[in-house]
Structures are given as C-alpha cells and as structure tokens.
Image (cartoon, rainbow, N blue to C red; front, side, top):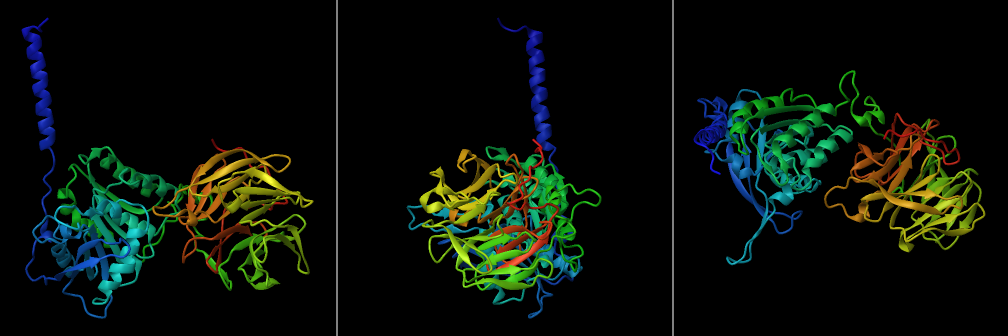
Length: 587
C-alpha cells in the first residue's frame, strides 16, 4: 500500500533535514588559518635547505631522499639541537601548509626554541627493476612498526652521515622527532624505544591504531615504567575510522595513558579529518610547548604527586629508579644466584664470583669453574650447569660433586627438598633429579627455551616457550613430574625479535609475581598470568640474568653482558629452601 500524502511529506521533510544536518556538519569543520610564525617576517635571517639521497643498510635496498635545514644562527663547531621530521618532503616544502623552515627561522630568531638543525627524511622505497614492475614502498613497514629498527636507522646511519658536515648535540633532551599520521606514531616509537637518543615528540593525527599494532601503546604506556620523554599530540574529531581502528579514539586513549603514567604530555583536539590543517596552524604553539625550558633535562616521571597510580610503582620506588653498577666480570655473565645471607654469586664461564651485598666487594668463590646457570640449594651447596662436561655439579668452597651426568641443561632450579628441575631445550625435556640423584623426565616434549622458575610455594613451575612469546605454567606433582601445562603468561615481544633473543632468566617474588628478563626490560606478571608492569633494564643493552638479593631479598640484581647492576624494589624474593604461600590473587 502506498503511503498517504502527509506521510510522504513527513518522510521527505525528515530526509531533507538529515541531508541538511549532514551538510551542516561537514561545513562545520574549522578552517584553521596559519599564524604570522608561518609567514616570512622582515629582518629574520633565512636558514638553508639542502637535498640529499641515501641508500640504507638497516632497511636493505631502500632508497630515499632527505633534506637538511641549517638555521642562519648555526655556528660550525657549536653543537646545535636537532629535530627529525618523518615524511620529510611534505614538511620541508616552503609552499605547503607546514613550512617548517619558515617557522624555525622565526622562532629561533625570537629565542622561542634553540638553534636547531632540521632533518627531514622520506620513507624508503625499493626501486622497481623496470618500467613494467612496481617497487616496494616501506612507509608503513618503517613507520607503523613498534620495534627499535627505525630509531637505529636514524642513530646508526643518517645522524652520523649528517654529522660529517654539521655539529649536532648528543644530548637526548635536545633532540626531537616529529611526524603526521604514520609519521607521528613513528616519532613516538623511536623516542619510546630510544630515549637515550630522543626525548621530544610532536605527533599530529598519529596512527595509534591496529595498522601494525600501534593500538597496543595505550596499554604498554600504563604498564611500562615511565620513560624520559615529552609528548605533544594533536588530532581531529573527524579523523579516520576504518578497518584498523579509530584515529580520534586512539589519540585520546594514548593521551589518557600518558597522563595516567605521569608523563609531560599535551593533547590538543580539533575538529578536522585526516589532514594537516589544524596541525600546521598550531605548530608554532606546539613547538613552544615542546621546547619550553630547553636548558633543563627531560627526566622520567616519578608519578603524580600524592597519587602513585602507575602500576609499576607497586613494584619499584619512584624515588629510587636508577640502576647502580656494582661489578664487572671477565666475560658475559651467564649465571646469577643468591645465598642464604643475601650475597650474590655470578658466573662468567671462567670463575664463580661472590659479591657482598653490604659492601659491593667481589671475591673469587671458585676459580676456573666453567659453568652456566647456578643456584643455591637447601644444603647451602651451589648447584651449577657445568660447561666442561654435560653434568650438573654441586660446589662448596673446598670441593665439588657431580649430581647428574650426561645432561645438557640450559637452566636449573632447586626445590626445598634438594631436588632439581633442569631445562634441556635440545632434548625438548624438563628433567627432574630427586635428592638421591635419580633423574627422570618431568615432562616430555616441552617446547622450552630454557629459563625456569618455581612459584613461591613451589606448587608450579614456569618455563618460557621456544618462540619467546609465552611462558608456560605446570603444576608440580608429588614425584616432581609436571602436569596441567598451559601457555599461561603472554609476553610483550618487540617487532623483529628472533626467538633466540627471547627471555633469558626468571625470578619470582613472595606475592607470586613472575619476572622475566627480556629485550623490552624486566616483564612482571601477576599470579593470574597477566602482564602487570615492564621495568626498565640497566643501561647498555638487554638484561641477561636477574635475581633477588640482599638480606631481605628486596634488591633486584640484573646483568647486562659482563656488568652487574642492582636497584631496590618494593617487593621481596623467595629463597627456594623457604617456600611461602602467596596471597590470594586479585582476579
């Protein structure tokens, strides 16, 4: 049946109103004008811009253009500040919206930012072999990825190349990164991974969505011990809403996470779509905010005054975040453990050394001992994986005893009754050795990379999967065998991390938290298996071994290559010969 005349008119009016409302909404976008800082001003000296080309090693086969802006105030030999812009050609153009060289000229002249060299870098392209073929465009691969590869590209390739001609500061507080869209998340990622190289970030309409995992940042920021970076974010309410996520929501979520974690962050909202109209208009103000107080270093947040809300502060003390260097070995530290008095022992393949917790003095415990993993047992003997023969040995200060033969173990843990669990990745086994030296397979076909840890009550044993992405949890049976295994703990793994660079050491605290030494830092998991915090590792590289030390086991010791560090924690470890029942977890 056809609708009546009034009904048709009602529908027509409603449809017309909807069309007009949508049209009005579209017209409501603000036309943000450029300010005077984006125009040439009389009497302001102009910097120079030169164009160059680069073929990368870190991104094999890629070629790209880059431009170097040098302000008129630059003096050879005097280190200048640095800002790196991704999608460089878009930002350096003098006839576009951004006009960075003009803005820099005006702001440097007025003293609103330091004398700053600008590096404008385009994404790489693997050129096509012929006109009948297409090249490979690396923009998303370089910009949207979450690892440290792009930061390494800048630090190891481009900055040394530009440094041949111009003197740039090595102070990370005077080095910034900027970009728009995927270039915005790229700027954040490079600073996030390498705050030792860059500490200021400008991100316009940043792609903090699921293009390549960028939507994870909002959670990572909340879990990771705060890093020393300052972040400016901008986005518009009409930004993209597509298969990989919503840009407007992604930027707000990241801004909220940064604020929660106590970062120096500013988020400026607009009403534009995925364009540079708003960002280019507020660029001078963004630069003023980013470079304010530039003579002062940018440091990591210690939490909001009176409100330690960041979860990592339940584990670390914000007032004691620095790692103290306490010892150096003759080679890479491959074993780390603690005795009943809280002193720490470490092996380097040449000897086993003892470090007194109170004085940080080192002495030789067993010279010439070629060992890997080491652990003290309830009998006060030091159990070790021998590298001289495929055996497990037990040391005292005067003698040594073989307790298990013909086993190539990667790691070991000792139980309260003196029994051992040994990981043997090559054999895909975890072995159990009882107090009488009898060995049997605790679990067959275990896909383990090595690190082992007993829960504080010794009811469960954790081991890391060979791919380095999961830690499995097994219940320990009365006979020492393992059952009810599950991939229980999900690790955060940086892009491009091979399995061989997975977790290398494990420890537990009295609350039942599992700590794993990883490329990303020390990842801490609560009893239900959730990643709760990522603690910053010592300087100089990834953490290799960790252990709780000190008379109260409230100091975390960690090794990087041949160097041993420590820092106090708000948590305490557990001696294996004194198992404790952890509290009921928060579910």
